[in-house]
Amino acid sequence: MTKGDGRRPYWIRLIVAAGLSLAIAGCQTAGTGGAAGSATTSQVPSSSAQNRAPAVSPVSFAAPTAVPQGRSELVINAATGAELHAVNADAPRFPASLTKMMTLYLLFEDVSRGRYSLSTPLSVSANAAARPPAKIGLKAGSTITVEQAARALAVKSANDVAMAVAENISGSEAAFARKMTAKARSLGLKRTRFVNASGLPDPAQVTTARDMAKLGQLLKKRFPQYASYYRAKSFTYQGRTFRATNNLLGSVAGVDGLKTGYIRLSGYNLVATGSRNGRQLVVVVMGGKSESARDREVTRLLETYF
Image (cartoon, rainbow, N blue to C red; front, side):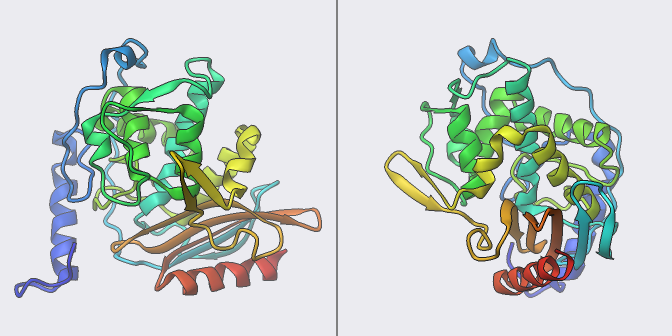
């Protein structure tokens, strides 16, 4: 999206678009995400189709309108869930690539159930390969293993990989988004609605700092075997090395994850996890004005509450 086009101011057009999107949400599927809100999907090769999960029924949820680049903060004790600090923690926000925590959660859940192993190849469609950056350059007709996909999501926040995961698990991104929202409800994420697997711009995809803190907490608690994925400072695929998007890894003592996110709608987001002196924290900052400003605020909160 670009700001301003000689007509209405950007923020007015966004609110109007969001209102229209929400008004028709009950009449269309949840898969309207993508770089410009397109719902284009392609069929997963038949080998993947045979391994698909059953269809998931739509989840009824009227998402509130989020404020563009709205500011939220939350600090919780990861061991107990106790709230230590909160600013607008329940206000609707755009998750951006924090979305991929749920994509990882569902992928890890399928591994735990035996549907996949870490070495299972996931098919890459033309639709997945065409996702905009950030991406790792997947080629249509190729495959990527479950482990490679999980590492690419955790480290590089790859949109092409998120689409490949969605299509392999549910057949389409629309079906996967419904499954994401259903899982959010079952986990107690009461104010979150997903419409795509990556966090690419869509005004109907909303969450809160509290929901993202809880998702980060549960992702690490229920799948501790993958903790090294979030700590990794880089990921190598097909001879290319991609640097982690989380700048606090290795620079702030005790930080061991978890997920960054940015689109113009959201501002700069970060769910940071860490432990120091026997204390475990989850810190969420959403709506940062810049990457450096977000990182400074997360660091300040970590130092204050450790």
